[in-house]
Amino acid sequence: MDWHQVLGFTAAVVPLTLIPGTSLTLVTQRVLAGTRADGVRVTLGSACGLLVHAALAAAGLSALVMTSARALTVVRLLGGLYLVWLGVTTWRAAGCDAGAGVGTAGRARRRPPWAPEGGFGQGFWSNVLNPKAASVHLTLVPQFLTAGRPVAPQIAVLALVQVTVVLAWLLSWTAVVAAARTVCDTPRFRRGVSRLAGAVLVGFGLRTVAAR
Image 1: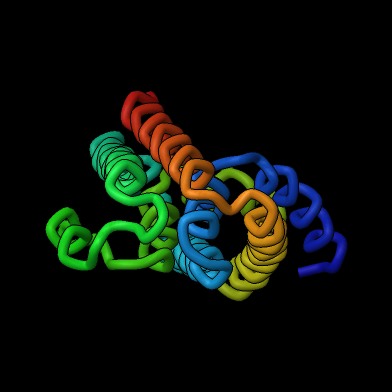
Image 2: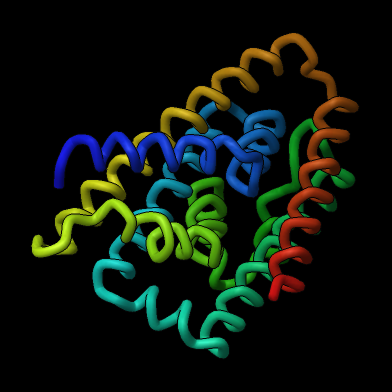
């Protein structure tokens, strides 16, 4: 793989990363409702979710999902329902106690067995169950592969580029939100942001479910 292909992929993936989406929403909500470390956990989970898609693409499994209408529908529905669940629980948590958050027992009662506790799990599953994340490796990545060379190492390089861009953006945003929190850290503000984030997540989920 030539350096100009890596630079070209970087230039293509940066604007896609900067578009506000689920990861940005989760980072904002978790930092304002918790701490800066919570935003870092969401960021790391999101990055690991992208690595899963890269591994699946290298193995050819993503292509199978994207070319099978039934498999794509299942992934889309799971991803959409997961985002709706995140949005609803985020909204309910804000209503229960925006200052201290819901209690451990309360979170456990609303937590399904397939949804790991904490920001890392939320960031991870929101990307793993996102068909758009998989489509990047099937529509964008192939344009920057060199014919006649092993595909897996090239996908690995481009995946590292994408993960680096995502980490840089989300960690920077985490720092910005954490700094802003020191200025407007009130229970009412946190409650409002959490409810807004919950509504946005539900919106993303419903859009994913309704996508064709």
